[in-house]
Image 1: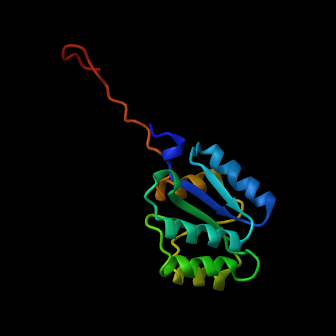
Image 2 (image 1 turned 30 degrees about the vertical axis):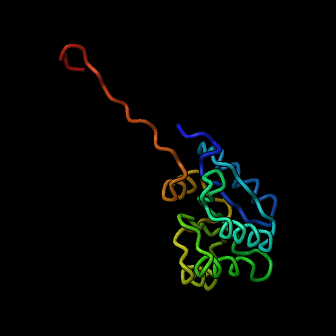
Length: 155
């Protein structure tokens, strides 16, 4: 099994502490072991992403695997990050998961236009988070159980 330091980092950009706490709790409930780095604003997120891109992702312990991005960060911060990631700032393998309320139709369409394929409500169920985590390859698959038998006897 991979150590926590070799698992990709999960980035969360959210400016509401209650929603951030809720999402982290959901990640804990589905046994996510990845290190988590949080950002309360888009400027810090962009600075981190730009530093990752400049430094490269050669060091596996620094490689981000997923970004849970609150679409409702103040101003255009979320879209600034999405524009940067869809352009020259692309980080190989980074899965972006947009967090938004269901009534954000035009903003969700804009996020889709920028390449986002994963969407969650701000208070997702554990099943919804697990589905996204599997799609983003954040969950380590359990080892398959192999049945062994003695001397050809049927199990």
